[in-house]
Image (cartoon, rainbow, N blue to C red; front, side, top):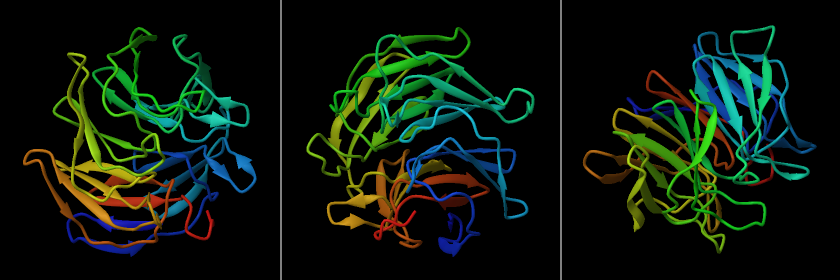
Length: 288
């Protein structure tokens, strides 16, 4: 684990632990980071590792759900919604829901949209009682720029307006009701640094395929904090990197942060009190 302090701009090492994996998800709730799914050297996982921030200790959670990787996860109340991704059979479009507080009914599964067979390497953004899914790769291996929206209150799926530059292994950041998509891989497999901006309330695209700053990268981790978007590590054309790019939403300006931590890809991040906790992923040597 690598820890980055946004206030002091310093890097430090966190406590190693949990089941090594990549392509997993991470959700922060009540001072704990919940890591689920992904792959290790043996295959796909459906295990849960929990990192308790206050005690800096690791706990094993209750495994469940369909083993998968390259999925997304969103916290809704006290439940984590995991959707999409891939397993040994291909793509999946079901949702596995993990309840943090209800020990009698930890896992449940709900069907996905009938409009698609699923996607992997996509993003999912929670806004106004709905989860907006965009980008990634479909079951034919093609990159997509379609929008699927899950309305939580109605438990229904609808389609949004397709747009933006088709990509996978990118990240999404929410600011003032708009979703900013940056980075990832294009159809040729190369890392990119273009940006797309989607307004889900009005179902319109504000910016599509605009060249941005920052190091082109994919399979990185990103978080928003105090009006800034922090993108760290991942891979470029030459391999893994450990550089940090910071984007200010208000001023539309990019700057380079302090590089640090162990270069990796397919990792995750949880942010609390200005500190970012990066865990998992794959290093240059293929070590998880």
